[in-house]
Length: 326
Length: 98
Image 1: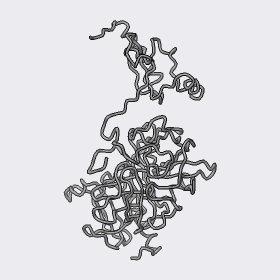
Image 2 (image 1 turned 45 degrees about the horizontal axis):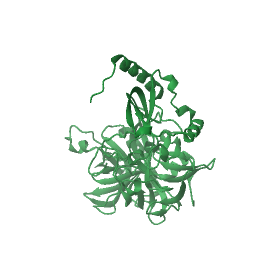
Image 3 (image 1 turned 45 degrees about the vertical axis):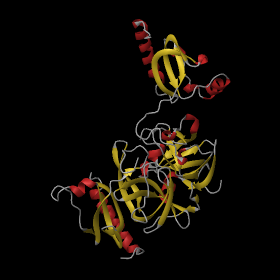
């Protein structure tokens, strides 16, 4: 049976929805604001015939959990008094259903209790995933951080410090509860597509590249060097550096900038694969010594090639060192 | 031309900078680097300045496309296809890249 709504009440609700949107649509908890029937949580989510402005949120803590949440995150609480209409807070996440979302289950796209290189990661605003490159340490403070590409951890010139970083990435199902780090700084102003995010400390980490092994240090890449990487998109792949010290144009903040220290990697054999979408941020290691030599960021299929940025200038620009041990 | 010859590398970097200053902002150019020359699919030991270009450049007629110098500071310049894209997961599906 079709339910009817009294037009005056509906108009009033829409005005209140606009006000709610002005206040809360960009609150990171909020996934949708609409007008609809109130949802009775206590009665198996049946709807009530009371019209309400519904604010949908990723996660709705209740009771003592709400009190604790409100204490810690006052700025994220939806204040019903600001909205001149009955308000219903609804738990709901609505991922975009475009190509690649939600991604098929992938062993590198799951939640890892111990963080390591080669697994899915993204920032909270990105409906995609890249690769967690590895763990580094701030040279001044000693803070532990994850290192990946700027376009994975930030992706916009207007992103602010403190942006949440999820493991797994959003397109692998990552959400608020999967926050592992907060964006700290990047090196785009030095022509390097790299950024670091400070770990929350909620999860352990190990100095490993998934299915490759521990990183033994850092070295400068060189022409003809054989390298291997572990990435979310293509898993473990190897290749050979066939081009060095390149410059790559990229649009950043409305202007064309240059990515410097670019190295090109080709497969060891004609049919091999070196990379694919989702590998951004992974680390290329020297095959013989497992020293990190470059940070992967781009690729091409015809012919199969990958581009990466030399690791020493990445670490220098971000003022970090590669972590050893765990 | 030895790969370990430091004088060669200084010259190569200088030549790369000249080439990049002139052509890196061109919309057909995707990367300028120093690397091996290919003969067909075979990689040789010869090193050159390499200008990587979009596929449409390779398909354009001689008169329509930008031309590059044959050499700079006695280092040969070669042109090769390469339309590199950032490798996040949600790019346009393209032969296996997602």
